[in-house]
Image (cartoon, rainbow, N blue to C red; front, side, top):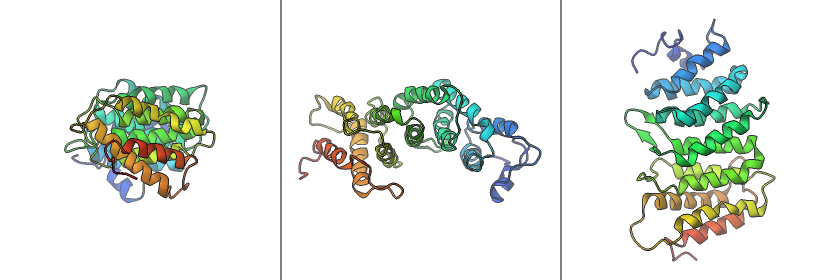
Length: 274
């Protein structure tokens, strides 16, 4: 990354990290947000991830950025729509976890607009590599899974749609990338969490399997393509999550029915299952 000391926005970032992220003196929240927004696109993983996103996460949780969260949401939605760099798009999705976690009431239909940008991007992102030797963590699948949970909590009526988005992501056929950085677990955790939405009906908890059934329609024996491998890995992880539950929240409602539907699909590659 080069020198991480005073330079980026006039802030000694390494000193801030070492001191548990005190708010820099003489820099107000709008200026701080401006600097962080730029850092979140940086190709250097230390600038973007270790410093930039960590600062957003910590200061967001502490309320330092409350006045700027609406603006961050708008900017991140725009990045999902048209930013050319994968690291910028992927980290834009992750920022929604911070923006929406504060429980702030945003004006008009802001959260719905952000959701629409996310819904357009998540199942269609082509670069789904978990890690790049130069760019570091990219993790579009995992970051999108975290954003999906945040949107489901902010827009519970969207829970059925978000489950469908997760299914579309895991079964996306336009990829040669096989999940290698625990993307399946992050997706499974997201689906399990969204299934905990109190308003979700038993029918809605199962509707998203239609996406997978359509994806496998007409499948024949032969080499397992990347998308199918990703789907099977995610469903295996999901079954574990449904039977063991989450540390925070336990086993979701409709878990038994969802787990049984999961096994029905897994019997395709594993016909010996009881």
